[in-house]
Every structure is written in structure tokens, then in C-alpha cells.
Image 1 (cartoon, helix red, strand yellow):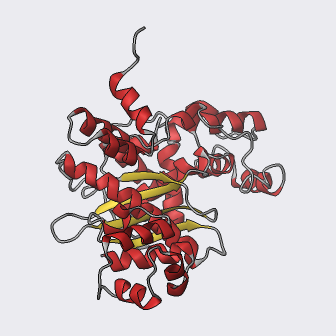
Image 2 (cartoon, rainbow, N blue to C red; image 1 turned 180 degrees about the horizontal axis):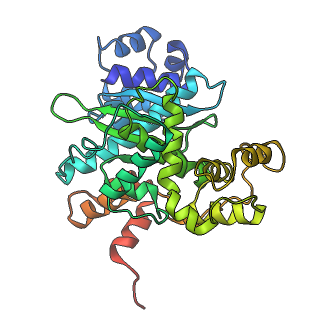
Image 3 (spheres, rainbow, N blue to C red; image 1 turned 60 degrees about the vertical axis):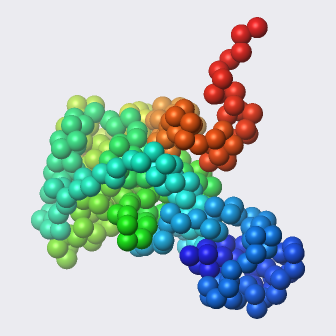
Length: 360
């Protein structure tokens, strides 16, 4: 475990074994680094601290035992993403997961099982079947047809760990399964970048939900990623609700209306335009014309974006991990120092929130 973590952290830092050895105090050799990574030798405590400082990672990351491996990692990335970017993203995620899973163990929380078993399918007849599957999930979870206030809160409630992290610039997010070893079940994790706007974030989360519901299409005419995107649109923007908001069989639609609808559902203007065509409120020719003309730049630049702490953006933030840390602190299962480290907050801030305001 230590060797794997050391190698990942070194790749994240973009260092050769010699480059790392030159940075560590007390001094060590590249041969020693090689033996550490091969699990043939363990460093002394002073060298371990020096390695952590040289690599800019915590000892929890280097020595943690919560995460055996990240399996099936799927990056949401731009072209040109480097191996170092990917290693950096994985290291960031592992470090956050070590704390997340440690606090769950401290609180002795049970792992929910089988939440998606009854919903999964591997055969899609046509695109209307995808819409029906999205509504089946909504019905199963008693969500109705109204816009979903927080996709993050919904997925956290269903046992998926959602992490927001400062990922490398070219990586928007990733999804993976966490292998915790033989004594623990695997868990699903979705990671989104702190730089991702809320419109893209909500669609990405709905897309990842689709992957847990539709495992295959069994249909050569419908590619899996296309099915995921269709599911995401249908889940976030149900046909019945959209027809009430926008009307049926429209001959055209103004820019003002499309922007109002994107704010109503918390999706991008481009996704909104696509959805209007999918449910035939707008004709396909009208949608195609829009993307050739006034909406040509919408896939690159979001018009009238939902700003930080406005509308849906105020709700699309992971909350479960913070709640668990404060719960453990309230039950005196962890110290204020440990809580401050987990929450990445100054100890003074944590102690102040324990006491509350001091009356004069």
C-alpha cells in the first residue's frame, strides 16, 4: 500500500526517483525510493515525514489503509490531459477518501446495499425507452416531476460518495469504484471539479447516475454514452413538466424563454435546447438551425450562467462528509484538531463553532 501511494504521489509531483531523493530531508538515495515503492523496505519515521513534505501530501495519504485501489476510473477530461494530471487527480481523490471513509468507520455506519439492483437494465429498445427509464427511477425514489433541488444531495442519500475537489485544469471530474479490501464492500464515488459550473455539474451527476442504471444498451443503433446523455436530460427535465412550462409543438422559441428554462431546471442552455428537440416541443430542424446560428457558441461558452450561490448553485455542494465530521466531533469520537484537519479549517474556527457565540 505504501509503495503504491508513494509512486502515485511522486508521479503527481512530476518527479523522478532521483528528483524526489534530492528533495527529502534527511537525505536518502534514489535506490531507497525504489525499494520503498517496491515494498522491499519501509522508511524511518523522520524520512517518512520528509517524503510527505517533499511531495506535498499528508501522512494519512501515504500510510492510509481505507483505499486499496481506485478501480474503473473514468475521467471527464479535455484532450491533452497528461499522465501527471491523471496521477494528481487520483492522489487528490484518495487523500479525500481516506478521511471520508475513516469518519464513516469511526461512526460505525452501515453500507447501503442493492439500491440500484431493481433499476438496472442492459437492453434499450429506443430513445423513448431511455426517457421511461429515467421516469422509473424518479418514481421509485418518489421524486415526482419537479426540478431536483440538488443532485449531489440525492446521490449522497443513495449511497454514492460525491467529492468536490480542486482537480487539474484539464480534468472536469471522474467516476470510479473504490476497492477497500476483502472486509469491505466496494463503493461508488463521483468527483467533480470546483471549477465546473453548476449547469455542467448537475448534468454530469445525472450522467453518472445513468451509468449505474443502464449498464448496456444491447442495441447497435444506440451508443452507451449517447444513452447516458439522453437519460441525464430526461431525469433532470421530465417531459411532462417541460410541456407545462414551455407548451407543446412550438414553432419557435425566444432566447429569453430558453434562458428562463435553463434556470428553472439548472441545466446548460445547450442541454435545454437539445431536450426541447428530444420531446418535440421544438422540431429537430429548429434545434439544428439554433446550433448553426445564435446558439453556435453555447457548447463552449454558457450564456447567462448560474453564478456561485445563486439558484441551484447554492445547493449543489457536498454536505454529507461535513455533517459526519461534526457529528463525530459532537459525540467526542474525534478531537477538534482531527476535525480541523479533516475539514481543512483553522483550529480556531472549529473551536469557535463548538462553543458558539460568546455573549458579552
